[in-house]
Length: 439
Image (cartoon, rainbow, N blue to C red; front, side, top):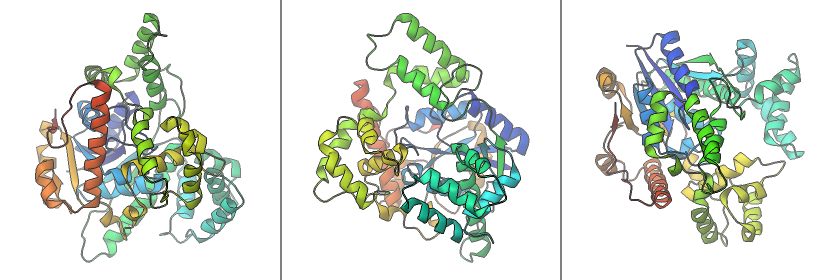
């Protein structure tokens, strides 16, 4: 049995994602494809536009065989921890051979040169890189700029412009983090006497279509960013300013960018029911008020300086996105601010990231859905996995009652469901009531 793994968000599942699934099966000759998918909140510090069960159904309908939930703590973290959590999740199934991921640049020499600088498990090490990075950050450079310059300083034979261009792509950065995490995972499996996990290899695939941040909707492979912007533009609360032609045009654009099955699933769930960051504004403001006197430093990624800045400007809070824009600076990006605010909202603290090994990052394998014909895959995982396979939340809650990652997943799902229920004006099933997605 040959199994490929993909780490994804599918927000939403579009033509590019279906193309990737097809290429993974073709290029790796995989019998099965497992998706490690973010739950209801994402790596950019924002909620998913539709819930995890809906997005899992999209993936399964397009050809994925099994969708596992990436725990919230890792799904909402920096690229480094997001990748580490995803790699550990796939690794603990005990069956994955290849981690497949898309990247903008297929220059393997450049790719591995940068990985060697960033990875602590290589002969190049990361000591010099950390020295350069710290100095640049102290001088006032933003993290992306400091990282690019620090890598360039460690690789003087490569033009700095080439490195800067490479690191300007979010997909390339994630690819680097995947390879770093794979190195660490494989190293731990090789030296561990208590854990006998399967080693995995990275399998990069050339990304097709528009860039990550592109807003263009022409062609067959628009970015998820463009699709989300078109969706929210057409189906925002203020529909009075939109003509029938506006909505019809947006509808046609979106339909052209999603696989038939994905569009049908999204349409059935209701376009007007999709959630945006600012749907969580009231909940965030309440949480910020609760902690304004003791500060926010205990929450993940929040520095003392940022904690003080949040308290100083709290009286100017109007919405989640507005407040994030207000707090961003040259040193701290908008995305970093969103992640900090989301961690405050979800009560994710610095201590949640204190794990000593890749193996400790994942303590369970939560199944969101699977294809009926993937029974052999599930049987293999039950036999080989180094973490319990969870198919029923009610059963798992007894076993994982003290597991902090599990408790974060339950809370984030309840919050998302509650906001979505208010948004739609109807009662939605909670984690204990929602059935597995089976196609």
